[in-house]
Length: 347
Image (cartoon, rainbow, N blue to C red):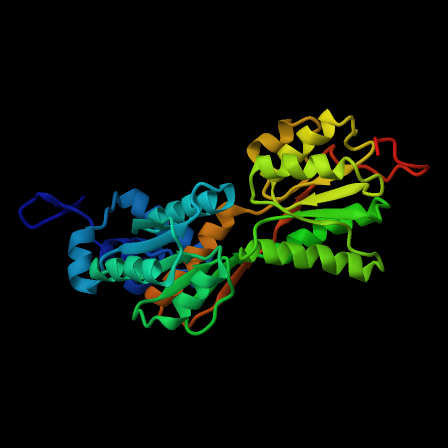
Protein backbone atom coordinates (compact mmCIF):
# COMPACT_ATOMS: atom_id res chain seq x y z
CA UNK A 1 0.00 0.00 0.00
CA UNK A 2 1.19 3.53 -0.80
CA UNK A 3 0.78 6.48 1.67
CA UNK A 4 -1.80 9.21 0.92
CA UNK A 5 -1.97 12.84 2.13
CA UNK A 6 -4.26 11.72 4.95
CA UNK A 7 -1.71 9.21 6.15
CA UNK A 8 -3.83 6.26 5.02
CA UNK A 9 -2.26 3.86 2.60
CA UNK A 10 -3.74 3.48 -0.85
CA UNK A 11 -3.63 0.42 -3.03
CA UNK A 12 -0.72 0.42 -5.51
CA UNK A 13 -1.59 1.24 -9.11
CA UNK A 14 0.05 0.33 -12.40
CA UNK A 15 2.16 3.51 -12.39
CA UNK A 16 3.69 2.41 -9.07
CA UNK A 17 4.64 -0.93 -10.60
CA UNK A 18 6.19 0.82 -13.62
CA UNK A 19 8.24 3.13 -11.38
CA UNK A 20 9.44 0.28 -9.16
CA UNK A 21 10.43 -1.86 -12.17
CA UNK A 22 11.95 1.06 -14.09
CA UNK A 23 9.80 0.48 -17.17
CA UNK A 24 6.94 2.24 -18.93
CA UNK A 25 3.25 1.96 -18.10
CA UNK A 26 2.75 0.26 -21.49
CA UNK A 27 5.34 -2.39 -20.66
CA UNK A 28 3.56 -3.23 -17.39
CA UNK A 29 0.33 -3.52 -19.36
CA UNK A 30 1.95 -5.90 -21.83
CA UNK A 31 3.26 -8.09 -19.01
CA UNK A 32 -0.14 -8.18 -17.31
CA UNK A 33 -1.73 -9.19 -20.61
CA UNK A 34 0.86 -11.88 -21.28
CA UNK A 35 2.01 -10.22 -24.50
CA UNK A 36 4.81 -12.23 -26.16
CA UNK A 37 6.56 -8.98 -27.14
CA UNK A 38 8.33 -8.57 -23.78
CA UNK A 39 11.77 -9.92 -22.93
CA UNK A 40 12.01 -12.49 -20.16
CA UNK A 41 14.30 -10.19 -18.17
CA UNK A 42 11.79 -7.33 -18.30
CA UNK A 43 8.92 -9.68 -17.47
CA UNK A 44 10.78 -10.86 -14.36
CA UNK A 45 11.42 -7.25 -13.23
CA UNK A 46 7.76 -6.34 -13.59
CA UNK A 47 6.54 -9.47 -11.84
CA UNK A 48 9.00 -8.85 -8.99
CA UNK A 49 7.69 -5.28 -8.60
CA UNK A 50 4.10 -6.57 -8.59
CA UNK A 51 4.96 -9.04 -5.82
CA UNK A 52 6.85 -6.46 -3.76
CA UNK A 53 4.07 -3.87 -3.97
CA UNK A 54 1.21 -6.34 -3.61
CA UNK A 55 -0.38 -4.91 -6.76
CA UNK A 56 -3.75 -6.32 -7.85
CA UNK A 57 -5.39 -5.02 -10.96
CA UNK A 58 -9.02 -3.92 -10.93
CA UNK A 59 -10.49 -5.84 -13.82
CA UNK A 60 -13.86 -4.08 -13.67
CA UNK A 61 -12.27 -0.64 -13.91
CA UNK A 62 -9.88 -1.88 -16.56
CA UNK A 63 -12.77 -3.10 -18.70
CA UNK A 64 -14.38 0.35 -18.58
CA UNK A 65 -11.17 2.00 -19.74
CA UNK A 66 -10.11 -0.51 -22.38
CA UNK A 67 -13.63 -1.39 -23.55
CA UNK A 68 -12.61 -5.02 -23.30
CA UNK A 69 -14.51 -7.73 -21.46
CA UNK A 70 -11.41 -9.75 -20.51
CA UNK A 71 -13.36 -12.76 -21.81
CA UNK A 72 -12.42 -15.24 -24.50
CA UNK A 73 -14.93 -17.50 -26.21
CA UNK A 74 -13.83 -21.12 -26.62
CA UNK A 75 -15.76 -23.31 -29.05
CA UNK A 76 -15.05 -27.04 -28.95
CA UNK A 77 -16.39 -30.34 -30.19
CA UNK A 78 -15.54 -34.00 -29.47
CA UNK A 79 -14.68 -33.03 -25.89
CA UNK A 80 -14.84 -36.67 -24.75
CA UNK A 81 -11.76 -37.54 -26.84
CA UNK A 82 -8.37 -37.38 -25.12
CA UNK A 83 -6.67 -35.01 -27.58
CA UNK A 84 -9.45 -32.41 -27.88
CA UNK A 85 -10.26 -32.49 -24.16
CA UNK A 86 -6.64 -31.95 -23.12
CA UNK A 87 -6.21 -29.20 -25.68
CA UNK A 88 -9.31 -27.54 -24.26
CA UNK A 89 -7.97 -27.70 -20.71
CA UNK A 90 -4.58 -26.35 -21.78
CA UNK A 91 -6.08 -23.38 -23.61
CA UNK A 92 -8.41 -22.63 -20.72
CA UNK A 93 -5.52 -22.63 -18.23
CA UNK A 94 -3.32 -20.47 -20.45
CA UNK A 95 -6.14 -17.93 -20.84
CA UNK A 96 -6.70 -17.79 -17.09
CA UNK A 97 -2.98 -17.37 -16.48
CA UNK A 98 -3.15 -14.37 -18.81
CA UNK A 99 -5.99 -12.85 -16.77
CA UNK A 100 -8.86 -13.73 -19.09
CA UNK A 101 -12.14 -15.40 -18.26
CA UNK A 102 -13.14 -18.23 -20.56
CA UNK A 103 -16.64 -18.86 -21.85
CA UNK A 104 -16.94 -22.38 -23.25
CA UNK A 105 -19.46 -23.76 -25.72
CA UNK A 106 -19.41 -27.41 -26.70
CA UNK A 107 -21.23 -28.61 -29.79
CA UNK A 108 -22.19 -32.22 -30.26
CA UNK A 109 -23.43 -31.98 -33.85
CA UNK A 110 -20.91 -30.20 -36.07
CA UNK A 111 -22.81 -28.31 -38.78
CA UNK A 112 -22.47 -24.80 -40.23
CA UNK A 113 -25.66 -23.83 -38.37
CA UNK A 114 -24.51 -25.05 -34.93
CA UNK A 115 -21.09 -23.43 -35.36
CA UNK A 116 -22.56 -20.09 -36.46
CA UNK A 117 -25.09 -20.13 -33.62
CA UNK A 118 -22.45 -20.79 -30.96
CA UNK A 119 -20.16 -18.09 -32.30
CA UNK A 120 -23.03 -15.59 -32.45
CA UNK A 121 -23.75 -16.23 -28.77
CA UNK A 122 -20.11 -15.48 -27.95
CA UNK A 123 -20.29 -12.21 -29.86
CA UNK A 124 -23.45 -11.29 -27.92
CA UNK A 125 -21.36 -11.70 -24.74
CA UNK A 126 -18.87 -9.14 -26.04
CA UNK A 127 -15.87 -11.49 -26.04
CA UNK A 128 -12.49 -9.98 -26.90
CA UNK A 129 -11.50 -12.92 -29.07
CA UNK A 130 -12.39 -16.46 -30.06
CA UNK A 131 -10.59 -19.78 -29.92
CA UNK A 132 -12.14 -22.47 -32.06
CA UNK A 133 -11.09 -26.10 -31.89
CA UNK A 134 -10.96 -27.50 -35.40
CA UNK A 135 -10.85 -31.31 -35.45
CA UNK A 136 -12.99 -31.46 -38.62
CA UNK A 137 -12.29 -29.75 -41.93
CA UNK A 138 -15.94 -28.60 -42.03
CA UNK A 139 -15.45 -26.37 -38.97
CA UNK A 140 -12.53 -24.60 -40.61
CA UNK A 141 -14.49 -24.00 -43.80
CA UNK A 142 -17.42 -22.53 -41.87
CA UNK A 143 -15.10 -20.37 -39.78
CA UNK A 144 -13.54 -18.80 -42.86
CA UNK A 145 -16.95 -17.98 -44.30
CA UNK A 146 -18.04 -15.95 -41.26
CA UNK A 147 -17.20 -12.28 -40.70
CA UNK A 148 -16.84 -12.32 -36.93
CA UNK A 149 -15.22 -8.93 -36.29
CA UNK A 150 -12.96 -10.16 -33.44
CA UNK A 151 -9.57 -11.92 -33.46
CA UNK A 152 -9.85 -15.67 -33.96
CA UNK A 153 -7.42 -18.54 -33.44
CA UNK A 154 -8.19 -21.93 -34.96
CA UNK A 155 -6.68 -24.80 -32.97
CA UNK A 156 -5.52 -27.69 -35.09
CA UNK A 157 -5.13 -25.75 -38.32
CA UNK A 158 -2.81 -23.27 -40.00
CA UNK A 159 -3.83 -19.62 -39.95
CA UNK A 160 -5.45 -18.23 -43.08
CA UNK A 161 -8.05 -15.71 -44.24
CA UNK A 162 -7.43 -13.44 -41.24
CA UNK A 163 -7.56 -16.25 -38.64
CA UNK A 164 -4.51 -17.21 -36.64
CA UNK A 165 -3.73 -20.87 -36.19
CA UNK A 166 -2.19 -23.02 -33.46
CA UNK A 167 -1.41 -26.64 -34.15
CA UNK A 168 0.70 -29.66 -33.34
CA UNK A 169 2.52 -30.84 -36.45
CA UNK A 170 0.56 -34.06 -36.80
CA UNK A 171 2.24 -35.19 -40.00
CA UNK A 172 5.69 -34.71 -38.46
CA UNK A 173 4.58 -36.76 -35.45
CA UNK A 174 3.40 -39.58 -37.69
CA UNK A 175 6.62 -39.44 -39.67
CA UNK A 176 8.71 -39.80 -36.52
CA UNK A 177 6.65 -42.82 -35.44
CA UNK A 178 6.89 -44.62 -38.77
CA UNK A 179 10.54 -43.69 -39.35
CA UNK A 180 11.29 -45.26 -35.95
CA UNK A 181 9.75 -48.51 -37.19
CA UNK A 182 11.59 -48.35 -40.53
CA UNK A 183 14.88 -47.75 -38.70
CA UNK A 184 14.19 -50.90 -36.67
CA UNK A 185 14.08 -52.87 -39.94
CA UNK A 186 10.31 -53.19 -40.39
CA UNK A 187 9.14 -53.18 -44.00
CA UNK A 188 5.48 -54.18 -43.71
CA UNK A 189 3.95 -51.50 -41.48
CA UNK A 190 0.19 -51.26 -41.03
CA UNK A 191 -1.65 -48.10 -40.02
CA UNK A 192 -4.77 -48.04 -37.90
CA UNK A 193 -6.20 -44.63 -38.79
CA UNK A 194 -8.68 -42.37 -37.08
CA UNK A 195 -12.09 -41.62 -38.61
CA UNK A 196 -12.54 -39.94 -41.99
CA UNK A 197 -12.91 -36.16 -41.98
CA UNK A 198 -10.66 -35.52 -38.97
CA UNK A 199 -7.77 -33.20 -39.81
CA UNK A 200 -5.45 -35.08 -37.43
CA UNK A 201 -6.37 -38.42 -38.97
CA UNK A 202 -5.69 -37.17 -42.50
CA UNK A 203 -2.30 -35.74 -41.49
CA UNK A 204 -1.22 -38.92 -39.72
CA UNK A 205 -2.11 -41.05 -42.74
CA UNK A 206 -0.06 -38.66 -44.90
CA UNK A 207 2.92 -38.99 -42.56
CA UNK A 208 2.71 -42.79 -42.57
CA UNK A 209 2.48 -42.94 -46.36
CA UNK A 210 5.24 -40.36 -46.84
CA UNK A 211 7.84 -42.26 -44.81
CA UNK A 212 7.07 -45.58 -46.49
CA UNK A 213 7.25 -43.98 -49.93
CA UNK A 214 10.57 -42.28 -49.15
CA UNK A 215 11.97 -45.59 -47.93
CA UNK A 216 10.84 -47.37 -51.10
CA UNK A 217 8.38 -49.50 -49.16
CA UNK A 218 4.80 -50.31 -50.14
CA UNK A 219 1.95 -49.16 -47.92
CA UNK A 220 1.01 -51.78 -45.38
CA UNK A 221 -2.66 -52.42 -44.61
CA UNK A 222 -4.58 -49.19 -43.91
CA UNK A 223 -7.38 -49.87 -41.44
CA UNK A 224 -10.10 -47.47 -40.31
CA UNK A 225 -10.75 -46.93 -36.61
CA UNK A 226 -12.81 -44.43 -34.63
CA UNK A 227 -10.29 -43.42 -31.91
CA UNK A 228 -11.74 -45.97 -29.45
CA UNK A 229 -10.05 -48.97 -27.84
CA UNK A 230 -12.89 -51.12 -29.21
CA UNK A 231 -11.97 -50.26 -32.80
CA UNK A 232 -8.33 -51.01 -31.99
CA UNK A 233 -9.34 -54.38 -30.60
CA UNK A 234 -11.29 -55.25 -33.76
CA UNK A 235 -8.39 -54.22 -35.97
CA UNK A 236 -5.99 -56.22 -33.81
CA UNK A 237 -7.96 -59.40 -34.32
CA UNK A 238 -7.67 -58.93 -38.08
CA UNK A 239 -3.99 -57.99 -38.02
CA UNK A 240 -3.17 -61.06 -35.92
CA UNK A 241 -4.10 -63.17 -38.97
CA UNK A 242 -1.62 -61.39 -41.26
CA UNK A 243 1.81 -63.01 -40.94
CA UNK A 244 3.44 -60.35 -43.13
CA UNK A 245 2.77 -57.37 -40.84
CA UNK A 246 5.58 -56.85 -38.32
CA UNK A 247 4.69 -53.33 -37.10
CA UNK A 248 1.60 -51.18 -36.58
CA UNK A 249 1.30 -47.43 -36.26
CA UNK A 250 -1.96 -46.72 -34.40
CA UNK A 251 -3.54 -43.30 -34.88
CA UNK A 252 -3.94 -42.79 -31.13
CA UNK A 253 -3.11 -44.52 -27.86
CA UNK A 254 -6.68 -45.61 -27.18
CA UNK A 255 -6.75 -47.67 -30.36
CA UNK A 256 -3.25 -48.97 -29.58
CA UNK A 257 -4.54 -50.14 -26.19
CA UNK A 258 -7.28 -52.23 -27.82
CA UNK A 259 -4.81 -53.47 -30.40
CA UNK A 260 -2.43 -54.72 -27.70
CA UNK A 261 -5.26 -56.62 -26.01
CA UNK A 262 -6.30 -58.35 -29.24
CA UNK A 263 -2.75 -59.32 -30.16
CA UNK A 264 -2.15 -60.73 -26.69
CA UNK A 265 -5.31 -62.83 -26.89
CA UNK A 266 -4.21 -64.15 -30.29
CA UNK A 267 -0.83 -65.18 -28.95
CA UNK A 268 1.06 -62.49 -30.87
CA UNK A 269 4.02 -61.16 -28.90
CA UNK A 270 4.63 -57.42 -28.69
CA UNK A 271 7.28 -56.47 -29.61
CA UNK A 272 8.70 -59.93 -30.34
CA UNK A 273 6.38 -60.56 -33.30
CA UNK A 274 4.80 -57.16 -33.91
CA UNK A 275 5.94 -53.69 -32.85
CA UNK A 276 3.27 -51.13 -31.95
CA UNK A 277 3.43 -47.32 -31.84
CA UNK A 278 0.60 -45.07 -30.66
CA UNK A 279 -0.05 -41.32 -30.68
CA UNK A 280 -0.94 -38.84 -27.86
CA UNK A 281 1.06 -40.21 -24.89
CA UNK A 282 -1.77 -41.12 -22.57
CA UNK A 283 -0.63 -41.04 -18.93
CA UNK A 284 -1.48 -44.75 -18.71
CA UNK A 285 0.69 -45.58 -21.74
CA UNK A 286 3.83 -46.01 -19.67
CA UNK A 287 2.05 -48.66 -17.57
CA UNK A 288 0.64 -50.86 -20.31
CA UNK A 289 2.10 -54.29 -20.97
CA UNK A 290 4.42 -53.63 -22.66
CA UNK A 291 4.86 -49.88 -22.04
CA UNK A 292 3.74 -48.11 -25.20
CA UNK A 293 6.01 -46.29 -27.63
CA UNK A 294 4.05 -43.22 -28.70
CA UNK A 295 4.11 -39.61 -29.90
CA UNK A 296 3.68 -36.88 -27.29
CA UNK A 297 1.66 -33.91 -28.54
CA UNK A 298 2.53 -31.24 -25.95
CA UNK A 299 -0.94 -29.93 -25.09
CA UNK A 300 0.25 -27.41 -22.50
CA UNK A 301 2.59 -25.76 -24.98
CA UNK A 302 -0.18 -25.74 -27.58
CA UNK A 303 -2.46 -23.94 -25.11
CA UNK A 304 0.17 -21.29 -24.38
CA UNK A 305 0.97 -20.77 -28.06
CA UNK A 306 -2.72 -20.43 -28.86
CA UNK A 307 -3.28 -17.72 -26.25
CA UNK A 308 -0.02 -15.98 -27.25
CA UNK A 309 -1.28 -15.76 -30.83
CA UNK A 310 -4.67 -14.45 -29.71
CA UNK A 311 -3.26 -11.82 -27.33
CA UNK A 312 -0.80 -10.66 -29.98
CA UNK A 313 -3.86 -9.58 -31.95
CA UNK A 314 -6.03 -8.34 -29.06
CA UNK A 315 -3.33 -6.43 -27.16
CA UNK A 316 -0.67 -5.60 -29.74
CA UNK A 317 -2.78 -5.41 -32.89
CA UNK A 318 -0.59 -7.86 -34.80
CA UNK A 319 -1.76 -9.74 -37.86
CA UNK A 320 -2.73 -13.38 -38.14
CA UNK A 321 -0.01 -15.97 -37.69
CA UNK A 322 0.43 -19.70 -37.21
CA UNK A 323 1.96 -21.29 -34.11
CA UNK A 324 3.30 -24.82 -34.65
CA UNK A 325 4.21 -27.19 -31.81
CA UNK A 326 6.66 -29.99 -32.59
CA UNK A 327 5.59 -33.41 -31.26
CA UNK A 328 8.09 -35.75 -29.57
CA UNK A 329 8.56 -39.48 -30.09
CA UNK A 330 8.62 -41.35 -26.76
CA UNK A 331 10.29 -44.75 -27.17
CA UNK A 332 9.27 -47.47 -24.75
CA UNK A 333 9.11 -51.27 -24.86
CA UNK A 334 6.37 -51.91 -27.45
CA UNK A 335 8.83 -51.53 -30.34
CA UNK A 336 11.91 -53.59 -31.17
CA UNK A 337 14.02 -54.55 -34.21
CA UNK A 338 12.27 -56.75 -36.71
CA UNK A 339 12.69 -60.45 -35.96
CA UNK A 340 14.05 -62.02 -39.16
CA UNK A 341 13.53 -65.63 -40.03
CA UNK A 342 9.75 -65.70 -40.20
CA UNK A 343 6.89 -64.53 -38.07
CA UNK A 344 6.11 -66.57 -34.99
CA UNK A 345 2.52 -65.55 -34.60
CA UNK A 346 -0.38 -67.63 -35.91
CA UNK A 347 -1.52 -67.34 -39.50
